[in-house]
Image: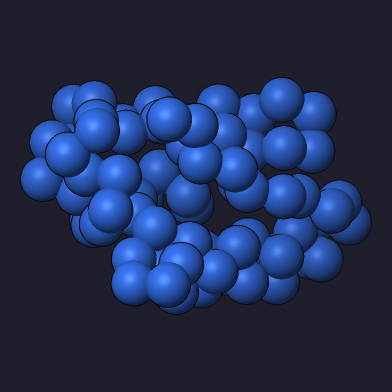
Length: 72
């Protein structure tokens, strides 16, 4: 699941080297550069909501319940 999130996030940001996606149990944590934080969150949180929706749909196939958090 982390590969999916990393693929989506790296397509959104400018500094692709600073993207870190880790899995801590059922929580997927995204870390990006401060300049790219707005690109991951989006206006009114629309992009991160979309990422969470994709992860929730994909996690149903895995039989797990993942959540996505953005670490500042």
